[in-house]
Amino acid sequence: MTTAKVYVSKMGAEKMLVPGKDIIFKPNVYEENQVINIVPDLCYQEVFGFGATFTESSCFNYAKLSPKNQETVLEALFDTEKGLGLNFCRTTINSCDFATERYIYVTDDDPSLKTFSIERDLETIIPLIKAAKKRSKDLLLFASPWSPPAWMKDNKKVINGGRLLDEYYQTWADYFAKYFEAYKKAGIDFFGCSVQNEAAAWQTWESCKYTAEEEGIFVTKHLRPTLDKSGFKHLSILVWDHNRERLLERAIGTFAVPGAKDDIWGLAYHWYSGDHFFALDMTKKMFPDKPLILSEFCYSEFDITDEAPSVHSGWKEAENYLEEYIDNFNHHMSAFCGWIMIGDLKGGPYHDRVVGCKAPIVADFDNDKITIEPIYYATAHFSRFVKRGATKIGVSYFSKDIKATAFQNPDGELILIVLNKTDKETDIFFRLKEKTAEVTLAARSLSTYVI
Image 1 (tube, rainbow, N blue to C red):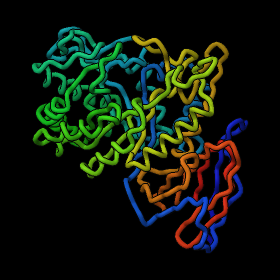
Image 2: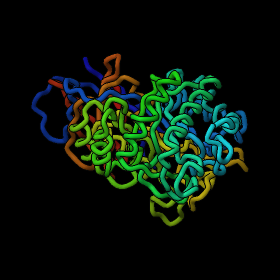
Image 3: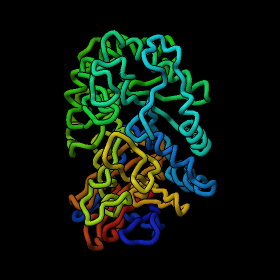
Image 4: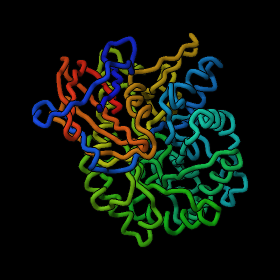
């Protein structure tokens, strides 16, 4: 007999991820309406994991928590049984906008990099990473820079875009190597890195622009050879790390550089410019051996319109998160890595920008209180059940308001995740080969089925 355990989160419920009554699959080949098909014989991409970013702001907030709340946060984010089990996370090389201030790892005008030091990261970032590694034994990390030092750039600023000067390409590659060497000395290894966060963006905060060709040249002529010579041949390199609407054209431009396809492992992208899921399909069609990684996504305080914008998220954001995950996985994504882990009551701290963003955990330091937000549970419906090494399998559904995606874990169990955006309880069927199961979806609900 084929059965499935179910875990449900509902709008307005006091508790999320609540176990429901097991469902039973029975022989039935005739059911045709209101059906979600699960097709384990059709295999797509491998799943590498789920994560968020060790921004200085999150690590700073963690350090301010009471010991009791620190333990609660560690369990909530990294525990593989009781929490999210985050295992595919990002760090920043130099500061990003979600740091307490701008900083770099060298003094001004030091092309020899003799002053390079990650001493600042030893204060809050590295302690949180080490605490996370104790909870998540298979934690993979990749690093991304927001900007080289100002003296390496044509605009002489770490903010406002600008570009890396040709004469500093090698120095900047050496900077990457020193970062990984320093972290290794601190006991932390990496899976990989991206060349540049948001490689086509002019931002009021730390930013640097590359053309597609420039990213390819930097990797093939400088970054890949430097990492190899420095003992980091194992590090995987990602490019683009920006919105998916231009993912295909950037991939075409970068991979046109001789040697780039061999030296670049995968493509990273963000969600900030609309759906464009077919861009993922086209990119995967043209470059089938390059994994697609959603490397950043979040809501700012004012992305969801309401009467009182807040750092706290609501059910609408949770639904949007789950729908985003479903659509990305159904269009070849192999991993997702969100933005900040822990926000304060202003959605920060941050600098050089006017608003913060919504985090899965919000800290109220004055009252020694933390809040687990609805968007946390959207992630949990995936990360707690879909294991590293799982395979995305075939799925089809009948409505734009009831969406689904499915996986097969390495141990053979099947995971089906379903979103019901409608305001009514809905009776449907799941079909698995020659069997079907009758299922009632709660109104405005997120559900995970372990088959």
